[in-house]
Image (cartoon, rainbow, N blue to C red):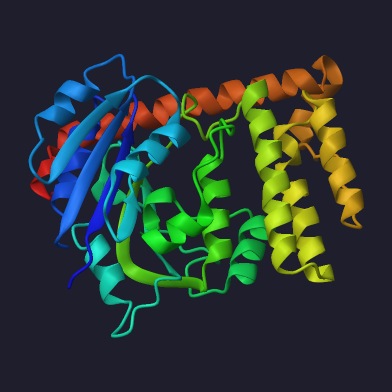
Length: 340
């Protein structure tokens, strides 16, 4: 018997992208599959667009706005698949993404093996996605996977994973208290329950780059900073529950140091919290360094104004990249529906 795969798509104000995402899901060569779209109280035409694709294989469910984590929990509760594929409403999968991963299980599938694949970023032109390998693009045990993620500041995009229902049930529900990095925290728990990660390079995901309005963008948001420090505490706790060695503690300190610039200097309370965590691990954090230009600006106007200026520059840069890529996409005249 071929296992049923549930493709779960949380959607919130995704009118521009959701049609292409659903084409990508429907184009999956693996059968049998079910596709469940749960709308999180969208105020645009996301539901109307999604309903055009409804069939015996694809259903659309609506609800009040509760956030991405709660929406994924609802989708999981409605699913019946032996394997779970999460897919955000603006991302795409290669048609053989799921098939490649399930074929890689071999003749005696281990449902505690977590399956991952490669991913590339794009804005409009998915066919020009950059697939840049990281230290996580290989088979790893849970300890080494978490250490590399935290120490090197790398991650796997949500849709790369294919999770057995057995693993999903062992990990528990998505954490609805986390405004950001809920996916990072969730897959840490999935990883803890697993026997390790099997990386399938031919299994490809196309990840639409986040902008400053996305959940993953922290910027100057106090709530997102607080959610991030909470997620970091959990990451460290999870890793140390597997192995509490000097190498693990060193990796955790580097993890805290990597994230310190996101809190510094706007949230001295969170900076202090991170510093105390580092001391508990036997290490010490250093104040984030600035370039000579930023240092000069800070001497004149203060460190907080530097942070504001840097945030503004990120937004301007993103706006320019987005507009330029959209123009090229229109000029080249290629449509996502041609491939999916």
